[in-house]
Image 1 (cartoon, rainbow, N blue to C red):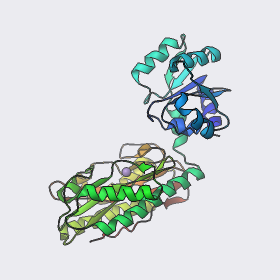
Image 2: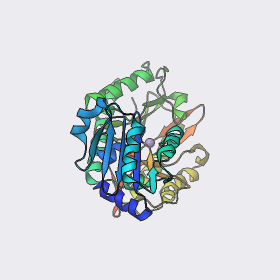
Image 3: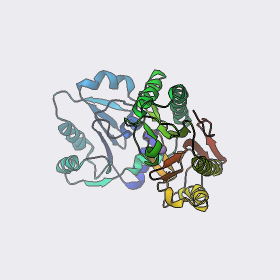
Image 4: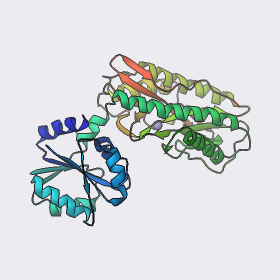
Length: 359
Ligand SMILES: [Mn+2]
């Protein structure tokens, strides 16, 4: 199915061969196109054939995981580029495409060397355009990744108290996600308390949770290849009135954007809905990042929901909606949910309460 769609796009653009070159998991497109979950492999897609080259570490795994339309090529004692050349000599392409944002310069030079004069052109969009629109099966996998993360978060809340370290809370959260089936956290868990909560990407540190702290918890699980990405801000003890006030602004902005989101909007229109509320409350300067991004095989993928992105949000995309207000030296607040966009509107896939929880 994916392969058919890629070939349609290849034909439109006159591309005879597409190379997906993965080293140490640098491109999730390899899994998307071939079904292979290993971290090293090269796929070559021509108009009528599709190959995956793997070395002996992965023969058994690839045999199990590969989609039936992909032929496994055992590398044996050959070098990867020798094998790629062999297939190139057989296909004799005039135009060869590759992922320009993934193939290293060094490997691009190697490709040029063996391409025998074929035109080389980056073609990331051959795959990323498809990845923007999630199938029902992909949405279900994201929903599982969300459930695992939410259940683990709820368990972690039992440990929130003055004196515990941010890093200890992060470890509990990550352990609880793995216990529930996560391959790993979707990214390094952000637990940022007190003054650190004003750092939008404050990874969990050695800081202890203190009386009166707000804690930004930004976390996600990777399950069966797919990621979730959620944020809640919680309080400990006597939280200041100012913090509570600002919390309500973020909450209103976030909820309004979640409810208004739908496919067919420009990405920047959605960003504006939340940004306007924060601007009008006088905190525009304190919301420096984009409203959100798409999730799927990667935690950050396109389309990005930013003030400058004029792309249309397609039906079937799953985006995060995560406005925040950060006041340096004082505190920060962010709330993030994962939302499926359809023509009819939005469906919030995550379901943690948005009320400020105080422990
Ligand atoms: Mn996010």
